[in-house]
Image: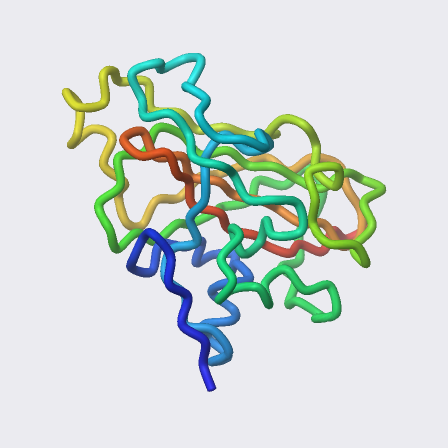
Length: 199
């Protein structure tokens, strides 16, 4: 029986290419996922923080806890956090430019997209935690119009949205965390993509 993920958001906002864990789970029928939303400003651990660059934006809600990053802390999507599943991996090469494509079905006022990668020596047998990721995103796409209420059309997420991101040096299985931060709410969309780096 399929599991329905009921979050604060609705619709199918997700990374469609390379397919994220949530998209794979939808396609194999184990999860019927809406947007996986939690507080923005990962790797922050608490809510109530203002954006240091855009103080007019809505302060953040609490980001997902360690071990619940792939599910964005949504109990109905908890299987996305499991370490005993052999997740399908997208084949990549260090230094290549990877096209990441988001699909949006709900109007979003997007401030930025942050892309994080697991550390070179991360342990895939452990739940995804902040300590498994680099402290800072290796790639960011930011919309700088302010205040957000005067630029609703400029900040509106386009579907599809594709970013070409240069990949750092890595080997073997790594996890790409894509976070889409929303200007007019305290939340972000969380998507996890499994990559396999050719040696």
